[in-house]
Length: 140
Image (cartoon, rainbow, N blue to C red; front, side):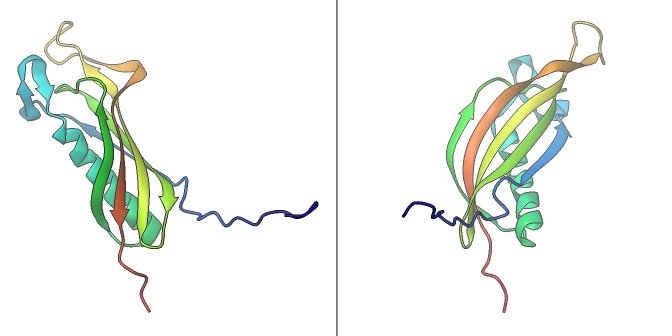
């Protein structure tokens, strides 16, 4: 590049697009002591938020191709309200890389009463991941 020239970079408008969904974790999904819920529950939420992302970004449900990394950071319990977010970090011709984060935003408080719960002052990040989705080629 010579002085005064600028590099032209096309950034896909889908990069940075974010989708968030919330879900209550029912007691029927607790599998372990302490009302713990298995990690697959959150991965299912990531699949749902990835599907919505594909619909919004590409007009198709797409297919989840792979997870590159999953980190379970804190427990999920029955009675939690989970918030799952997906953000497009890279958009290729047919593939999209998504960053996922799941947070507990409300939690049951059985120590205060049978149906007591609270909104947490700060969400608890429980799972992070990166994954790849694939959409069909654009139509004619």
